[in-house]
Length: 525
Image 1 (cartoon, rainbow, N blue to C red):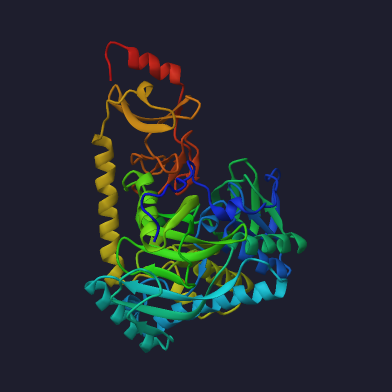
Image 2 (cartoon, rainbow, N blue to C red):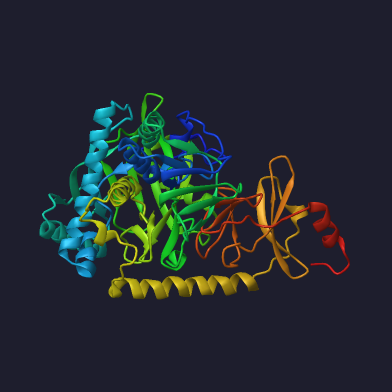
């Protein structure tokens, strides 16, 4: 442990993912003409890139469209654990879906891990890959019992594991469940190599190209914000949240959570392994090499998007935990990630609806995107190539298991309704002129809710706080300098641009002089 009176380096002011900061990614042009391909893949994360790589290797003509920069989304903000140990899941899957499907879920994620290992070996990818045991630990009696039930589920499914009563960290646990021979890596070093292979095989990649709609009457066609389109035999929507929902109503069937990560140099040597708490709030630990030094990624603090406390406090909580367990010498990076969870906690992968056979989606990885995202790419590839895959029924987006799905559907949509009403009633008489530099807040003017952020140079940016998806009111996220929707997880920059869906249109922006005149009016707020 460190001396509590010792001065540590403070958290960096802005959120920056180590993965994205540590590598130079290739750049690609915007789509500026209509094209035709065999398969158009929308979304430049692990699923889209892996699927494009696999299909291009099979000789298909592919085009990959990314609304922003490749790997700037969830795949660039992960903890990058490659594992089939996905928190407490297998006992629940057996209860809700049956033993055979629970076993298939395990096999899918182990197959994904083995695919990554094989690809690293074949392409000789230097990506800081290492085998690690995955530890799931409980610190309370309630979760110790749940962990014992999970261990029994492992045994029933034939998953090799060990239930122990201590872990090699300064954390008092009741028990811990170990899944051996899992892995971790640098995800962007791995995926950048796949990007280069896509180009080598003749694939086309377009950045700053936002897909906004799909037409299916004649041939599947993706329309982009730049008024260009891509026709294809298959459309693969791999955009974290599906950019096109069809009749699937996915915004009502998934919830969005944010979680947080810090990368820190510690005083105590990390013992190896990957750790995650069964208890809440979640705490996750794994090692990482940064500039030749071993550091630790400390993650957790999950909450529904737009519904947490001041986001800076989540980073502070992780720092306090890290100090207690390992002693922190310095924190070099901090970032957050957004993840989607389906009604039954298994991703939606496959045909978007039964009537749209050529439009495929992949979404809802529940924080385990490295393995689930790769498994999704393998399944999507088989569907496009017409190959049988025994995972199709497990992952089909049209499935419905009444026990978890109905309950969670009602809970999540009641929560949406609550925040829709609450946001409309919430007003604030704060004057944007009183904001300090680098501060954001909601304010009211003539009974209308607006949002203001004053940047570090003192410039005010004012937006309408009504989300362009279904009209919920966004909240200010001080940690990421963004406006986040508490209903379906849409996120907007402080200038109103869409950062994450399901919203497709930006927030309305206002000229400050006009707002200032209204504020100065005798009628007041």
